[in-house]
Length: 270
Image 1: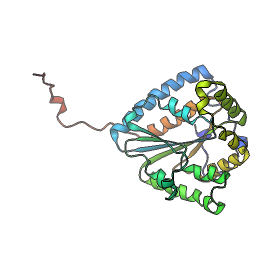
Image 2 (image 1 turned 120 degrees about the vertical axis):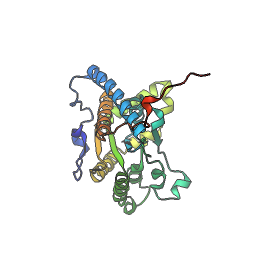
Image 3 (image 1 turned 180 degrees about the vertical axis):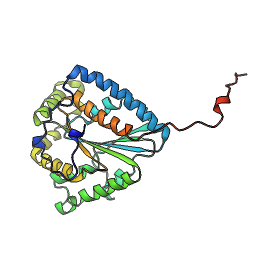
Image 4 (image 1 turned 90 degrees about the horizontal axis):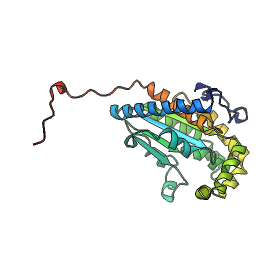
């Protein structure tokens, strides 16, 4: 999946990134689903090992435009893992309490602990995305946050956290279809927010904000991956393959049992 990794120091132009790309799996959807089934099984195995070893920490960050597929990615990619060892955090508009602190305060308390895999559904990056686009704070403030975030993630990485960040890249045409599907299906009306249409009008501004984010905060210790997300099955493969590869690279091992277990006999119940 290195083809989707943002090289540190490079300048991202999202107009040159095809959200409908499926080049890493030319076999097609049916074969892709079979491979994804294998990836989910492998991820469950590696996450069980992560939990047992209780040494490494893994943080997965998901960012996308509305309808980009963050919830679907979480539901599909992580459906087979042990819920004891995974934590999903959703970051919505900050509360008054959170606003009374620095913008990273509410993020840090949810960083993964040893042995766990944490998924951020939206994240600290909202403070250089929606904050920038809607001009919620002056440019002088939000422009400093790229360096803050890099330093924050470097600290997490230095303390043993493996960080993987995914931007789920969809086209405006695909977003229109997904928004319409929410309107057409009464069981999904609850997911439609008319405010999403206001954000849709600002698509070029959001793309500029995402390009700056991807260009300035993809690092060796916390890389961004631009995931073609028009095809949901392909999106799931890219994310799962990347996470599986990263976990396998940790060279984890099950901890040894107590000494003398070979002589233990389970007694009958009286």
